[in-house]
Length: 70
Image 1: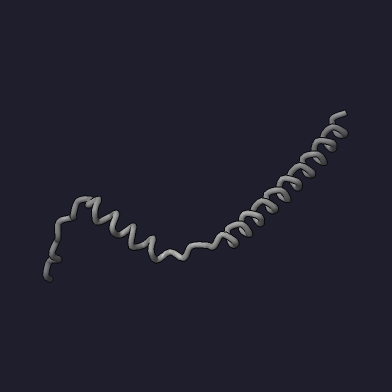
Image 2: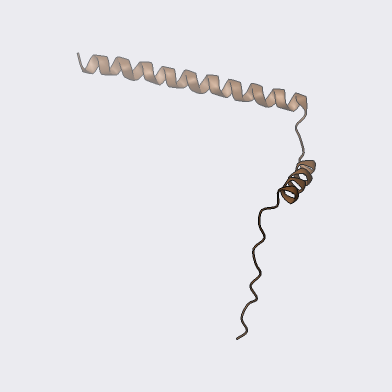
């Protein structure tokens, strides 16, 4: 059986890395300003809803424990 040829590993090349990063960033489809505002609003509303649900559950459990431990 033939042995596989082992090639030495190249060291880190900063210039090559930055060139590849730049090339990849050019391929990215960036969101428009309108889309970004819409997504931000959706996240904000979702956070407010989740906070309200946690607050409601916390209040209910606190009152239940207060009644039980009386």
